[in-house]
Amino acid sequence: MTAPRLAPGGAARPKPGWLHLGPGAFFRAFGLPILQEVGGDWGVIGVSLRSPATRDALAPQGFAYTALERGPDGPRAAVIEQLRDILVAPEDPRAVLDAMADPGIRVVSLTVTEKGYCHDPATGRLNPDHPDIRHDLAAPLPRSAPGFLTRALAARRAAGHRPFTVLSCDNLPDNGALIRGVVLELARRIDPALADWIAAEGAFPATMVDRIVPATTPEDIAAVARLTGRHDAAPVVHEPFRQWVVTDAFVDGARPPLERAGVQMVSDVASFEAMKLRMLNGTHSALAYLGSLSGHETIAEAVAHPVLRAFTRHLWSEIVPTLTPPPGTDLAAYADALLARYDNAAIRHRTLQIAMDGSQKLPQRILGTLRDRLDAGAEAEGLLAVVAAWMRHVGGTDEAGRPLDLRDPLAEELRARARAADPVASLLGLRVVFDADLAARIRAPLTRLHAELATRGAITTAERIAR
Ligand code: CS2
Image (tube, rainbow, N blue to C red):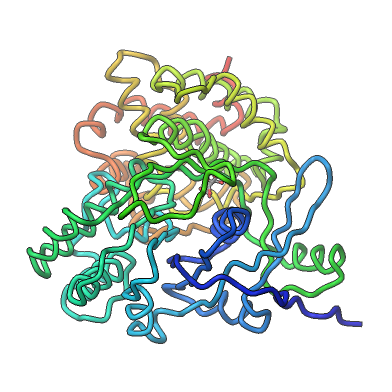
């Protein structure tokens, strides 16, 4: 017997005031449930920049879907009905620009992953040679997220409307300033007066977003059907924890009352962001590379290994001294809470999912911390071992000789460099990841650690360092 389909309830639905670029699992498990909790007149239009898959799965359900929370007290399902529509940009970029130009849209948020910013990860600046950016400079109908933001802001200016607030929700340091810089650089190349207007009138608040959301699997879809008695083609799965910290600087103050749902509206996100990127995402990447090399499939399995657990704690001992604790936060307690979140075995967060796009993630997760440690004359062997493990990982096989699926916008180049006679020197030559100064400072210890990983393996190396 097939379960009935999920469909939205009959209640009057708020009209869209918010548009989101990249309605993947993360935003559907994080931002949309929060906006639903906040309530009011803030329905959301989603825009997929690449694939129609999410729209195709959700359209027959009226864009409603199940968010399945998996925590220690067992699973809990909620129906999220905050999405009004999903537009698919490659099918109709004009419709996307029109939606973004509608003055009723006050906020445009984005989760397009690190690589969606078309920037140079080492410097944070627009990469003018990115194929999508080249296209967006030449043609009025864009492909990239920065292209859509810039062209839509241009349309609003031309029509005499106020700009929308651009709210980056990706795991990038100072994500507001980053997207602002990328948009301004693009705008300046199109029309300097547009860039001046965006600089003067626009707003790009920084945010720190946090919730662990593994990719939805066929088993999750079956579990949702069992739990709710309804078939949902595209549910999302998430942990109970969530934290959203936002700079309170929106165009004309137009925003939902986010604090009603526990969002922390602050004047400066930087300390929250650094804590989360370095302590959570940094150790996540560590467990992803050391864990995948040593045959661990998920984060919960990796931290259950006593050596990887001790290594994670050791990394925090290197990371914490580089941080300023955010107001009201105790970093030791934060670390304990992270470990408890990683231990949640009901969340099957695959190490290979986190290992993905390492070239875009390492700078803000590991390399900034590493530079701070070296500048302070402090020992940084744990952080260096993570970089070495990434270099082994991009080599393409785990320690048992099984192939590792390498997903990265630079995959081809990474593979070629990992096969060079001196893979460490060759990978350190990637200027979009490592600046020349850092590369020179870490080459010798990194070469030693890379060799140690190759001969003794991830666990033995991690054990020596954590001891
Ligand atoms: C993870 C993040 O996939 C990854 O790289 O580190 O998605 C992580 O789960 C979130 O940032 C948690 O908020």
